[in-house]
Length: 133
Image 1 (cartoon, rainbow, N blue to C red):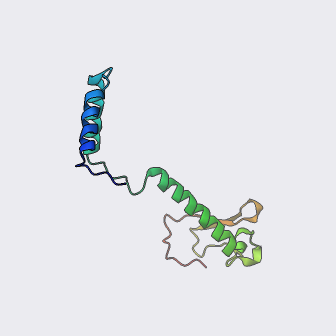
Image 2 (cartoon, rainbow, N blue to C red; image 1 turned 45 degrees about the vertical axis):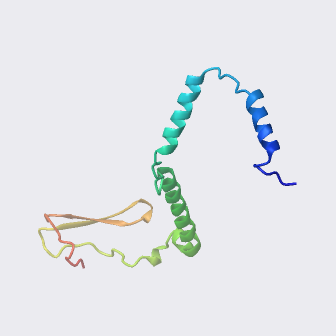
Image 3 (cartoon, rainbow, N blue to C red; image 1 turned 30 degrees about the vertical axis):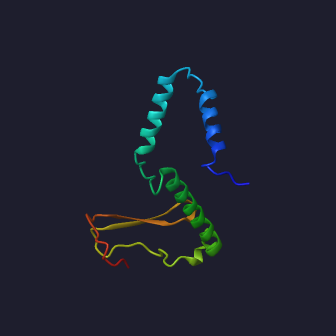
């Protein structure tokens, strides 16, 4: 059965509810009113858009990219992590001498045969384009 709002019984029910149903008094009406007004003001203001990238997100994505780079380099270039033998080096110092008598050239071997240092005395500057024989 569907109720009709124009039904006279409905009017009688409304009148009885208005007569006997009372609103309870509020303990602190000013406080509640101020809270409601504050919520209305807060919801009425447009919210600031969230940043596209947060600092924490950027840090985690950078750490993830670094970890992915390490894993890919280990998987794709496993030979690069192994120490090289002496035969793999392209150049080797056989003799260190100067063609100009004013220059003095001395070669020093680094500990553990990790390289050679050429010490050249008597020259102020040697350009990087200069060929060394």
